[in-house]
Length: 254
Image (cartoon, rainbow, N blue to C red; front, side):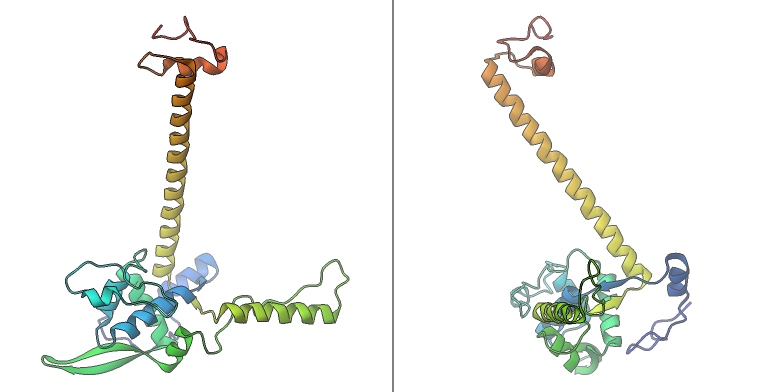
């Protein structure tokens, strides 16, 4: 078992980790994801809280209501105006700390030793590359920039391809720099579980909306029929008997 502090904190990963190796064998490689939004939130939190530790930054992003999160911290925003408090509540503390390690390895976050009344402690700070990225500057790989342009219908000329590539590059530049990262299996699995949970919740909301719509339809049908009975049994046979004043004798109430 590895002990805390036995691995370097400044990265980057040099390979050889059995968890990543197993994932490559099983799934064809560790997933590469667009982490632009998440990286900017973490960098903005670190920049906003300055000399506070990573745990407090993560607590802020996860929407903690602890007394340790002061009111002024809850009001902090990212450069794009996003309120930092609660902006990352969909992911666990371990996930955010994992992303922190990846950004340290990319040279976007640096670790600094601070001196306090109880001794020294380590805090995170946005490095120059991280600040540039946070403020949408620098040369990070844009999404789609590495994908070649394929001729269509066999009639596209070289000039057309160059024009399309230039347009794609301009669009990517307008959208800002993107950050693509290969996530460790634990982070990747958490994202997949969160996506599945979100899909299940969307399905539950759809079903509830359909149920509400059906209930509204039932009420409208009863009002149109002038039915005074306290049940809805008659509505079960409405489609069979049509809009009659009362579907008796097929209605159990009648």
